[in-house]
Each structure stands twice: as structure tokens, then as C-alpha cells.
Length: 321
Image (tube, rainbow, N blue to C red):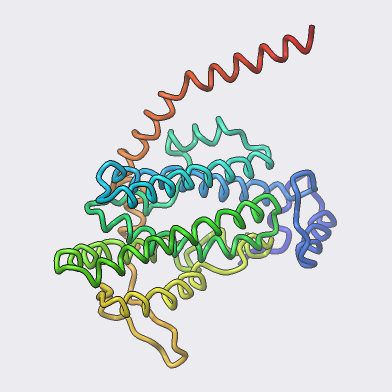
């Protein structure tokens, strides 16, 4: 349990914290120029940059399938989605920059493995159905989390979430439409859809974070109005929506312990958190490959950054003259 005043920095006062927390209690948004606790700023930079990294790395598993899409329509849809994800990363990097973080620092932290991103993007995509299942399950889980964050106390983050959620909702519908079509299609298509569900169901549950008792940052982020729901609450909402829809599509959820309780909530079996942490640490999955791809893209874009810097320097010199 968080102790009173345990997050007050040496140059901060209890009165400042009390006034800050009173604003949050009133439902006010904290803006970039407002006073905020140093720990609030630090936690937001950690959380928003991790979210931004997840959007950028999240382009990779599906982007691999653009050239192999079965139809022109599916290809254009997937290209648009990947482009959306890049845009989401930009919104979020900008939001983190309002807190004093630099783009260069955040990218360096990602590429040197000092920053995390969602572990689910380190799983391989082995069939075209994975593209649809990512849209239905992964984007579906993300929407549950992001809808909650749209009400976050930090204004720039909250507003970025509003736009991101509208686009993610479209991605979610696209993924569901694809998988439902395959689930009622040929035997090969149904088998492909079921195989994708078998591989993505548990990672989708894990991407919503550790159980509340094992989540060290949930308490303070809830107190300061950034997280309005806990990991387990968001996970329950996700399962309640998606379990009946998957079953209605004729698919089998790979959890023999899945059942409804007396209140109608769908309850899952035990989650293998050893896998979750192993993927995060890079002991399993494609973490090294994903970051190598991001590093190559970063290196290939160096000339663009250099050209922009040269142009900026020239404009400043002209203005000075």
C-alpha cells in the first residue's frame, strides 16, 4: 500500500501535492505547463513512451504480410492499418515530449532495450489469419485499455487516446470481420482461424498487464487519475466481450477452465506468467529481431534527420542575419 507523502520529492511540499490531488479529485485535466509532482511526470513519461514504442514495434508483425495479402482489398486495408499505427506512435511521442522527454532519448532507450514495449509484438505471425486475430484480439484488448486512458488526468495523453481509440475501433472491426469470414469458410480457413486463436488468446490476456497484486505502478497511477481501472478489471471487460463472440463464431477458446460465474462474468484459467516475463526479457520470442528491424529503419532514416537539421540550422542563420 502506498504510504502518504511517499512520492514527495525533496524540492516539493505536502501542500503542493494536496493541491495537485484536489485538482484530480475535481476531474480537472493536468496540462503541460501546470505544476505536477516529479513522480507523476516520471511515471507518465515511462507509460506514454512505452505505449508509443508499442505502436511503432506493433507495425512489424502485420507489416510482414503486406506483400502476401490474398487480395488487393485486403492489402490496402492492411497498409492503411499499419500507417495508422505509425501515426499513433507519433501522437504519443508528442504527448511524452510535452513532459520534457526528447524524441532522441526515447528512441535510444527503445533501441538499447532500456525501455519496454508490449510483449505481445514479440510473437511471430505464422499465417494470414494472424493478421485478423491481431485485429480482433490484440486491438480489442488495446481498446479496452485505451478507452480507460482517454479519461486520464493528463490532458495531452487523454486527448491523444480519443483519436487513437476511434481508429483502433475500426481495426478491431476489420479483424473480427476477417476471422468470422474464415470461421464459416472452407475447412482450411476454419483450421487457420482456430490455429490463430490458439496462439493469440493467452498473449492477448497477458498484454493487459500482471494481476493487480503484482503490478507495482497501478496504485500510484490510480491515485493520480491516470489509470481509472486496474489491469484485472480491464482484462475482465475484455473477456466478457470477446469470449461469447468467439464462441458464437464457432471457434474453441483454448482454456479448459473458462466458464461463466453466477454474475455472468467469464472467468479464465491460470495464466502462465513465466512465459510473459520470459518474452519481456527476450528469453523467448522475437525481441531481438524486432529491435534489429527498428534499428535498421532508424539507421536508414538518418539522412532525413540530418537534412531536416541542416534546413533548420539554415533557417535560424537566415533569421539571425
